Length: 179
Image (cartoon, rainbow, N blue to C red; front, side, top):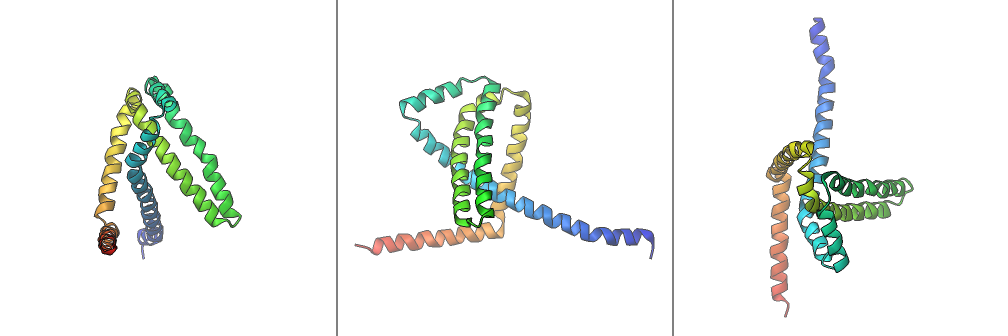
C-alpha cells in the first residue's frame, strides 16, 4: 500500500466528521434563520403598533434621523445587550433549571427579534449609506434567502407544512360543530 493511499484513508474520517459538523451547524443556522424570518415582519409590526404611543413615536422619529454610524450603534447595542440575558439562561441550564433557562432564552429571543427587527426597519436607510454595509447586506440577504428556499424545499419542512394544514383544517371543522 502506497503512502498516498494511507494518507487518503486517514483523511476520510476527518472529512466525514467535518461534513457532519458542517451539516449540523448549517441545520442549526437554518432553524435560527427560519425563526427570525417568521418573527421578523410580524414582531416588527407588533412593535410598530406599540410605538403609536406619542413618546415612542417621538423616539422612532429620532432614530430615523440618526446618521449612519449612529444608526449602526442604535442597531448594535440592543443586540449586545441581550448577551447577558442569554448567558443568564445558560447559567440557569447549568444549575439544573432547564424550564426557567429555556423560558428566559425564548423570551430574550422573541423580545430581541422584535426590537431588532423594528430598529433595522428604522435604521436601514442610514445603514445603507455605509459603503461596507451596502456592499455586504445584499450578499447576506441573497445567501439567507437561498438557504431559506432550501429549508422550505426540504422533506421535513414539507411534512411539517402538511401537518400544520391538517391541524388547521381539523380545528376549523371542530369550531364549526360547536353551537
